[in-house]
Amino acid sequence: MSDCIFCKIVDGSIPSNKVLENDKFVAFHDLNPVKKVHVLIIPKNHVDNIATLNADNESYVAGMLSFVKDVAKELGIGEDGYRLIFNTGEKAGQTVFHMHAHLLGGEEMGWPEA
Ligand code: 5GP
Ligand code: ZN
Image 1 (cartoon, rainbow, N blue to C red):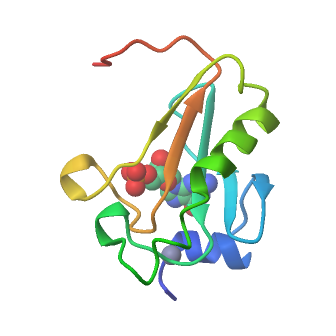
Image 2 (spheres, rainbow, N blue to C red):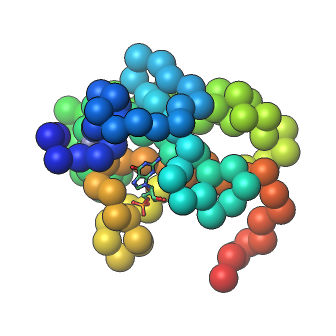
Image 3 (cartoon, helix red, strand yellow):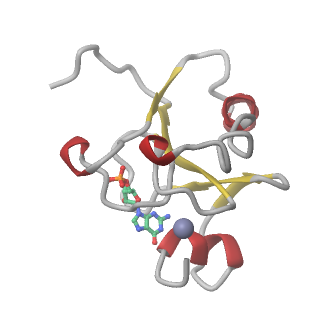
């Protein structure tokens, strides 16, 4: 998608502070972190969000959680604990419509959070 900022991060035309990358996924630090550790994890192929997963794209993102585990380990928070959030749709606060997981950690987090 030519006008998608996360596709531009994947192709390198927008710079990002990358944590880890493999053939299917990339993890980079959020521009406006809300926790000490705030990393975004995205599939390299464009998918709008979880709600638009279908037979054509769901196998592509099937390994995403395994990649999250590797990212958490790379960040040194694999043992401490962390939170994974997929804002899906406008009502949930999704602003960038390229599927992404927010990986939050590095500090104590309450649940439920105000
Ligand atoms: P959403 O609200 O869609 O779940 O999350 C989008 C996230 O993308 C926000 O946390 C926002 O700070 C982050 N973001 C938006 N534009 C950029 C960018 O160009 N670079 C990086 N690293 N993060 C971005
Ligand atoms: Zn995209």
